[in-house]
Length: 471
Image (cartoon, rainbow, N blue to C red; front, top):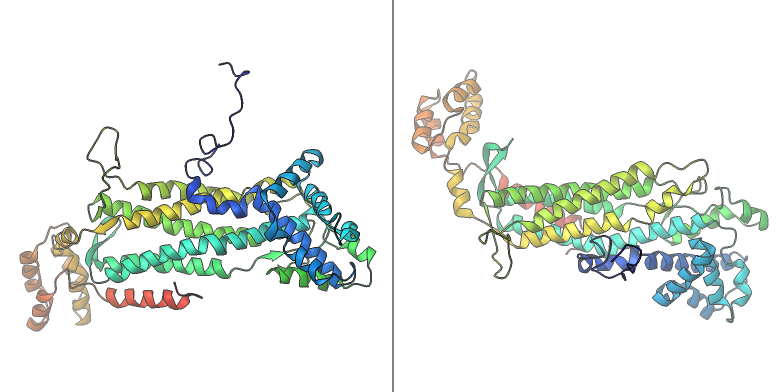
């Protein structure tokens, strides 16, 4: 079939241009209510309606009856896909998304008791007054209602693992090489605490919004109603929507607050990516075993394979998400003079980096559910080389004032494979009292875990106490 004769394919999960709306749609479908075109239009209508109510409260619009106010305040909740389609149809003529919404809003009032308010719809505003509030509302709501439950769930998964394995000894590695013993629970607790700290910061981070007119000076509102305190009006309206007011703007609200909000996600992505890669390595080393699912296939040619695909999928999606957030951080602060429109195509697509992040977080959780520690192997590896107790030996000698103990232990241990028998021999050569030597000989890799258990318990307690709602 020639290119000219090929009919356009209908939009389905099989024909979507990206996997977020294709093969991965089921995993991110809850985002659509917020960040889709429908979600953005619905929130614009909500903001426009609440603005009209606010105008009535300062006398620009006649006093509203209780049913009228209730109806306006519920416009967003009652907004339907059919309503959104009507607005998109109008936009085909206007080639302007907010103006199309404004025209449709006027039609919603036509034929009702509020028909006399039609000319006060979008009164004194520029599109960006509606849009900057809309995008920030969407961002706040999708974070609270979608991301926080998923991220807190991931923290909970880690907390349970940390608590269950707080006494499970394992060999820690620095630079990929054997270091000293730790516990599996402590290693997991580190990730849990890092992640929880960023999630709590994201949860509490305040966004700013503006309602300042075409170039930031409230010109039209001040000129039309000079006796109204429009600065206070703007502040009160924005606070009623949960924002810190920004009164010093051009046509657009500066994006630094949104960028910082996105950077919370970027930092969370980095932590989850670190977790993915460590889990992958532990699986590769057989320190973690993977759950066998009977009908799954790990390779098209190697029947024996069970691959860590959930962690790998998460890793790839985190990379895409973070790259887009980083682009946003470079692009959004820059707008020519009082504004240009190049930010619009960027901010309206915030569903993409959010979608890749959500998909990644869910796959990391799935990956964690499918792994179990191979305690027998971890213990075996821990006991293979007792040179990991060298730190204990040289520190003991420091305590008792031995001259240059580091060099003494280095000469006896560096680059050597040392078992229990060899360790006993090394201890016998150390310039320590018989009592101290006896104590060092009683030390084993499994016992040399410091305060790992106590610190893990402290991390769990700290995380639980940091939450507004205990999950």
